[in-house]
Image (tube, rainbow, N blue to C red):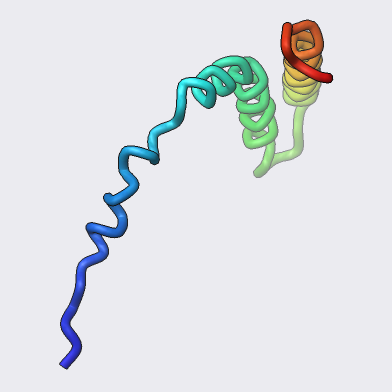
Length: 87
């Protein structure tokens, strides 16, 4: 008979390492405008999945796409001017 062994110890053995570091949290915070803009864009697309997009829907998608692009450009420009970034 094979004993049933729990994997609890194996899973929780690295619990202290599973938390994000301060650097990772800072990176997430820096990218948060891009993440939120992408969520708005996805919401606009999801709203039109089961129907033909109206003119208002198309406008909402275009605006969300422009906001997502602007957020990405801002992030790239911020990274390019940040000290210690790049070569």
